[in-house]
Amino acid sequence: MPVPNPVRLFHITAIANLPAICAAGALLSKNAGAAAGIDYQNIAHQGAQGARAARAVPNRPGGVVHDYVPFYFAPRSPMLFAINGGRVANCQWRQGDIVHLETTVDRVVAGDMPFVFYDRNATLAFARSFTDLARLDAVAWDLLTEHPTLDGFCAYWLNKHSVERYADRMERRQAEFLLHDRVPLGKFVRIGVIDENRAANVRTILAAAGVNLPVEAKPEWYF
Image (cartoon, rainbow, N blue to C red):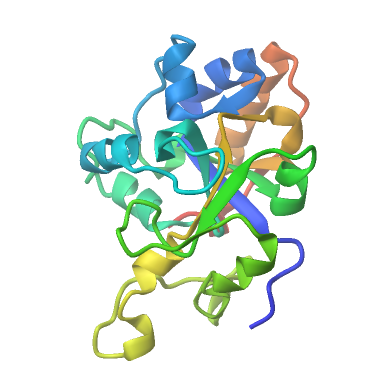
């Protein structure tokens, strides 16, 4: 299947993290945030975080996954579903408390920003990594964009072992695009939230920080 143009990217975080993100003027990697003394509110599985802290990135500029800012190729991710179901230990938030920061591959790689992407969750031992944008065809676009769709992305992502092509659908839906160290806020095109009430809240946070970024209610990005 042809690679979409543009290739859209999505990062999820808690609304509570936006003041710190705005103050930094960028979305920072886990390690860069820790080095800057920023205590981001957790929305991730602790086991996965441990794996990402240790998982080496084989491509330049190297390091570990936590040295990179992670993006999915679609919103409404399995991770968001887990958060909303209360299945992430020590995470008090639910999906209404989460924002999607959207950008595109073309925008984030401009200026020679170091990147690497994976054909599935980056922590999996059999995930393949790439630094050649011509290999974006390794992402499972047939699964990500098949019908029924919500804003162009398939509404379903669960594994279905009775159907071969869906046996590892969830892992492939979690393909990742990683940007090294930090992504300036100017690289983003908009922030998506679950409803207009959250949109008003996020606009207030951005205005107080002097950040000019569109905020839209995108309920189709949520469960």
